[in-house]
Image 1: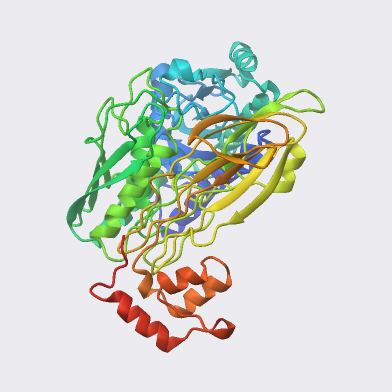
Image 2: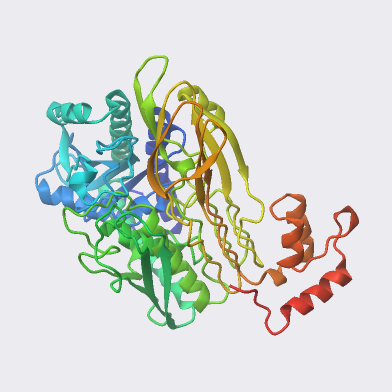
Length: 595
């Protein structure tokens, strides 16, 4: 493979898997050595390889919101601030103004150098932090009016290693500012280790096949990916559409945030354009998207809507044009705009808007809307351990919002939110109760909370938990309490989110959607997460499948009868005659169910 002959399809396939393997080794290192539960349980991290000219090449098992756009911008920032790179360098980056997603996503960048000192690739390991120095013990400062009130330490490609040795000044700064310094230190070492594993493996691969071969592969792989994307877009109908999706009222956005997505498909040229410029200016809160998240959120909606074998890399990106403007809530923020919640809430409305727009334009493509983030069951918990008096801060992943229905299948129930594509894991209740002074009272799916349709949206979850022997703070930024996830093509909306505080006497109080809640010992918080939207008319869902949904308790008897028009008789069997008559009557003037 090290010869000058052009690479054939077999060699291309082998090298693509070899590079995926490098990324998987990086991810495995982070998973096994990260100290925060958000890493070693939930897997809220991503690892990827970027070319020397800052093009995403490989990103196995990485969260889409982390890597579709951002690695290219961060690697470019590293080169801008450090024009002379050396083997053994490493840089810490989390600036939302220079390509990162949001300040909680600490990212390690390691340039991979050849023996002549030439920069060949950049290894990137990004990991969500349980505590990033915010003024409150949470990674989500949704109500912060600017980055100063947010309080996070911002590192625009700051050097943290030279000649493979730590820059102790930066390490001391982080350990002094972050509430759980040993936990952060463990996560930092895990990220450094992951990036160095990637560097070692890539240098070994280059020693085997040659740097020129890897460069040749990168060029052809990206071109191949571009051709695959263009071919998929050519199968879609030409058209333009504008859809809107609204984030609930929020501190700093008291009227909510209407996100408009203007989408155009040009199958002849093989291009999809997403125009996000007709949206509000940046807001005095943490909902604003970084440039990386604005671009990525649009791309997520596109990739969710086409053939899944199209490789998400810089080559296929060339066929997606995202139009942004400065000082826009879904655009390019200016310092000191807060982007604390950039990876989830408003970003989800961009992704959901894009995939819903494609579904409305193209039969058999696109998706409904995924349930919205971030309910208390995915909040950041903090306090002091009653046995040791040591502080703890961590994000729990006890219950996710639900997936969206597609043109060909029911939802992925535990997708989490549209930006992580189901790659984050839900916590083990038993592990969380062992590690933290909390008790989980219940965790279950909620019947009828998934959007009804020919294909059904995922159900929301009810989770109740509280402190054991201490007080507990829970920080969250819940969306979807008012504006539920939309269905498409006659599919129904998913269930709405809710949150309550259960006092010691058993009484429940409604909790704010964006809050840092203090729970006293014996109290608990009840979190109800969103359901996902349905696809197609519920009257088109096979009656036998409706009966199955009823047996599995995804839906109720009432929903089977009044929404799906299916009559279930004795023994759980479908009454075919009554069901056909009822569906004909309900179909009436239109086969589509009310939206």
